[in-house]
Length: 190
Length: 190
Image 1 (cartoon, rainbow over the protein chains, first blue to last red):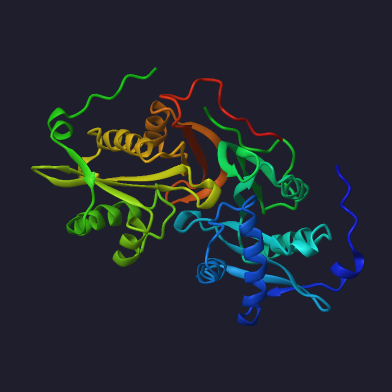
Image 2 (cartoon, rainbow over the protein chains, first blue to last red):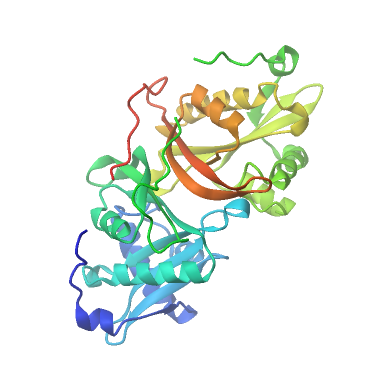
């Protein structure tokens, strides 16, 4: 098992993760714009408008959070929502964004742990990431450390701005036990 | 290889598949309501309103079609759209609905073949079904016959109205060759 990365104690220890409010819109948009403009981690239009971005991040049924550091302000944001409606609404989906100036400090991990706790509290039975781009190795490593498994791979499903067509993973974990046990993963039937 | 099912010659031979127009809204809503109310094939709210249903089926960027039989009227409908935005917009997604009174006639297959042709014409490089419920064996068999493969399985991701929690498949095929060759499927990396 990989050791957790050393955290920047000051930044993460004093960081508060809380539900987002309207006063956070400007900070969220700054982070969102930066992440989406890079075009290498989300399948979203890099030129998405502020209005569309905030409508997406604060959509009906979506729980929106920010990670705030007192001396710095909002350094990250995440959303938690049902991945599907109707008979699929017990599976959560989440999306995470960290300000470029605050990366490598454990903020993504802190938000992900908060998110799993919130998902459990809200009664979700599993969590699914629909679209983890295979070149986003830091995210894949983090999700695996948090009990997610790659349950499927979509060949050449993402056009990376530098690397061309790359694979995309679907990642999934149950929330019914602390950690998905090895060997429990469902396998394709064909 | 499984033999194609015998078709009802009269119904399918005279059937026309064409882009939907506003005059089709009532017929589409009848089919949509019936399919979604059954709650066993789509992860949508079974009580979805007509307005929300049509907004979903005719969303911006979505191509909507109907299958029409002269003597009967609209017997099926499907949508074709990018599965993601930005760097993921070259992969298509589609959804199909057939009127209960017209099932088992090959209408789903005829619409799926039309859809693959349209997707190719529109320049999509692959097609993905995000959410094929494992109990929907007729659909799975049809997609496999049309070259799709199960690339991942989501354990207990759908709450079936009769069967409880059942698995859901992600299915995928390239559109760059006539048929996905055996053995080319991407496999999970973990």
